[in-house]
Length: 199
Image 1 (cartoon, helix red, strand yellow):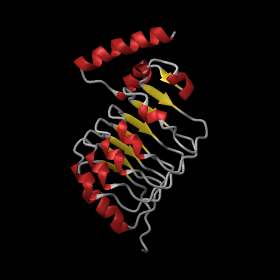
Image 2 (cartoon, rainbow, N blue to C red):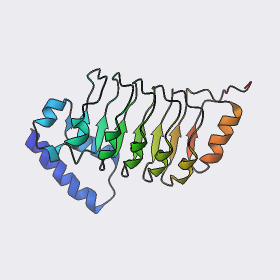
Image 3 (cartoon, helix red, strand yellow):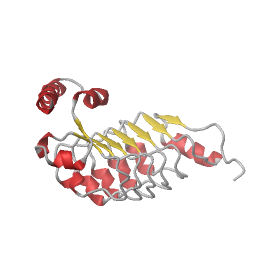
Image 4 (cartoon, helix red, strand yellow):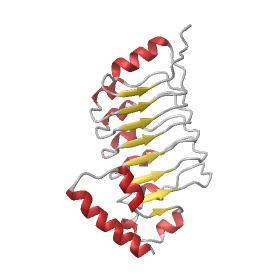
């Protein structure tokens, strides 16, 4: 079964180089490893998608050092409070899913994920984003809803590929809402209608 999945992945890879790929196609076509042990037991360069949901409190460093072709990393629904700086080693990563953790801050090294297209960081405890997030020139979508964010870095105005930002379930002051809309003028920004307009 895995050989078949690998053959499909290689065929899909050849198609993707000839035409524009989609993240949806990537998700449906490649084999997804759901344990670190299984992934480590496979040829390391054949691991393209990894999903770890083991109530992790820390991310095993092998996730960042052992899989050079990793494109899809799902660490959602764990107990993570931080992401190590080694995240910047995943140069081929296209989608990063970190929702439903307890993450308080993202490392500056997240700005080194030059090929990242989608970032899901909803339902965490983030108050700010690092300025280096502006280096994600290919990022198209970022989901931040249900965090404690009060503003976005000015560097995000240079993220020319950005199409949509989800900031729902976050209470902003009226001024904060206006600042975000001015910063992301050509981006679809989802925010709740209510605001903390008394402040």
